[in-house]
Image 1 (tube, rainbow, N blue to C red):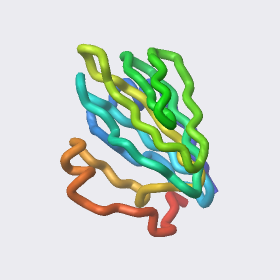
Image 2: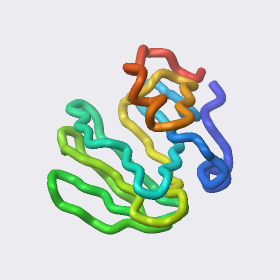
Image 3: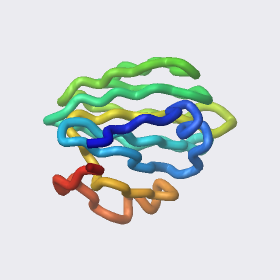
Image 4: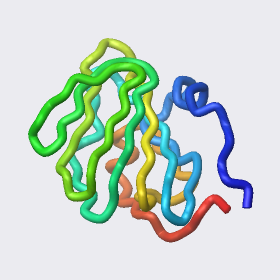
Length: 131
């Protein structure tokens, strides 16, 4: 097995896609995201997995079970399983972040250029891993 070794800051900051799955393991998944000014990931609940976010560039807000918290570069966010959440870009530049799902939430290798692309296709993890 190879695992994943790369410069996550560079991958995140250079990403221009709404969502890009970089690595899928059996229990974790690494995804980079770029939100345009005013864009949001969309309110969601993951009943069976936790989620970690790390902001590399930009600013915004995270909403977890109705509580809003401002976020900025270098902030880390943990969303527990079952929590209703949304992440919004409140800045005037792209919000660059990465997220780790445990267990995976998306099919391995998926790239969604825009939020509209992501919303147009129902895409659930199918058990396929990067390895």
